Length: 295
Ligand code: ADP
Ligand code: ZN
Image: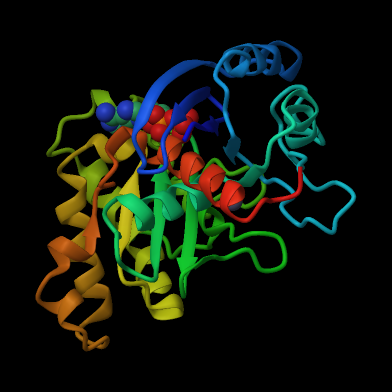
């Protein structure tokens, strides 16, 4: 079986073709430009790929409510040309196959539950900490949508005692994304994350903010696994700092051995590595094929 996958990111698009076991057989990545430039590249990629269904994990916010007249559109984004753009509709017109459609992080959470670090679990959260912060929610064996879709990157945070940085979120200033995404690190410290040494104070502060949101998410959703991806998480010293901070925050309150005794296996890197997003889109495409999602 040949299933198409599109990881539609604000920085880059990744298109691929895979099989029903989560194997990516071929892929191509290119920078995200104006949709008039990017969509023809996507369509050209799939032209000779014989995809039987296609899954799309998209940057957002996006409309994922099938009852809505703007279903399939990117909604509010400052990216030129993308606000209110009918991304799914454009793809559907080009390829008459079933389509899966969800946020990039929901797709990644789903892919990790199917083939990655949360395989066999009925719930997981997938965080990306990169240009923005996003949180995908998979719970009780389902991707969670709710009213719109979860927007866990914008939860409000308690300020680090030594941090007077205002935050960079254009909506909230010092929400999680405003304090902890890659551009926040760069604005606070005057250097990009990868230029800061591993023992820099930035990383303890970064862990402080991410761990706060993870703590709240554990208390709210009780997930079986928490998976942390995105460019900033390439700083390998972060993961242990985050685990310690989560344990300190919880202070023994959640009496689960998975957290208290095995936090190294509870808060983890993506099992699918750099392909978490693309494999997630593949999983969405496969699900669409299986239930014959509306063409
Ligand atoms: P995107 O979120 O745009 O899909 P990434 O997940 O690669 O892409 O995130 C890009 C952000 O992550 C940038 O702000 C960049 O500075 C930061 N970043 C990328 N690599 C590293 C690294 N090795 N260490 C720290 N920060 C990084
Ligand atoms: Zn925000």
